[in-house]
Length: 61
Image (cartoon, rainbow, N blue to C red; front, top):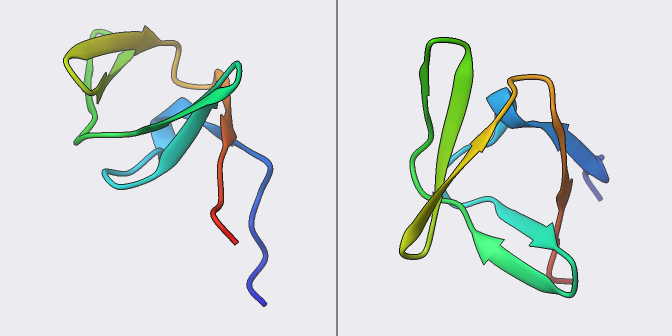
């Protein structure tokens, strides 16, 4: 079994990662960075994060 972190910094999120918000898990699109902000598309919306902000990861076992 691989070592899977419970959280990950926003700057390390990749397209295809599942991220939890409350009781929902969202599939991340291709993130990009501008002016020290990380933008990550989730479905029809784009969310802004600080590069070192921790996001809760979701794994389907």
